[in-house]
Length: 343
Image 1 (cartoon, rainbow, N blue to C red):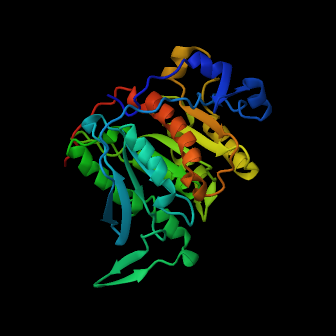
Image 2 (cartoon, helix red, strand yellow):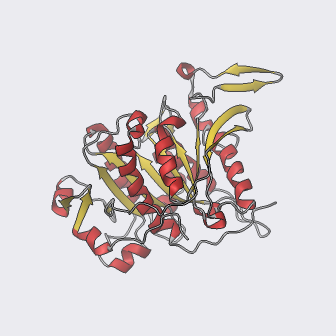
Image 3 (spheres, one colour):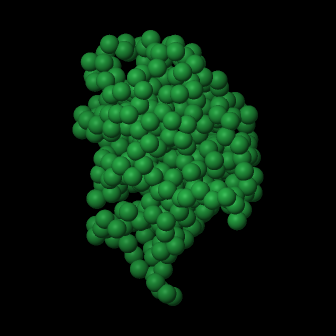
């Protein structure tokens, strides 16, 4: 069984045209937009992943986590019924957003068998309290500093608490953390890249596996820098992880609304950086399936200007189909075995 209940469509079809919501967009048009001129970057496959087969859906559960620096983190967990075959997905909202922005998308990916956790990052939604001894203090969004944003992706912060939760679920046989995917919108995309770089910075040990769980990133309307937390700096720490097609490099999908010129410009720059050391675009179906790891998808007829856009079922369904196709291609179909990670 797999996270996506469908097989991948013909890759040759991906090469000939980008099919979006039933409309064929020739590659020549994409080239004119500058989307095919960055190394190995090519258009993303068609967003036509069939709806998943009906299955029993586990009711989403609101959970409370505490970070090492004592932020009271609130999240919603959408459990999978696929056990050790379930692909775990962390979904991260944007600035001034909350987990409510991604609820529709999370439900849709859960229906495909994924185990999804969507937190309110610190200073957002219901995650605004910090324990100080026996008392608490509030995190004021307006006064958040660079250190607050950095803490979202640090060893003592938000992503570490989420990772510990998923590790427990892995060890209980409820998902495969070795297939971890992180989806981030705007600010959340910056956090996702920084966490991936941190996750792959753990040293290898003879006795146990440390980190190196993130295998794929989905960056929705990514920004290069958010309040001092940068994507470029994270990439520079681990260039081979982000900018090559090596076996140990990450698979990355960039999604951006085609009506948002500012976001499109930033997404294209990130796309070019990530593609700078990759091979030339693959043309053979087998090579694309096995080797290509960087994909760019302009979502038609939308700006994706705010997380509120993702609350629209029509928009979230389009995004979900693209992500589902990516997850199937780069995670579900790959032989990444489940292992116990108990200390």
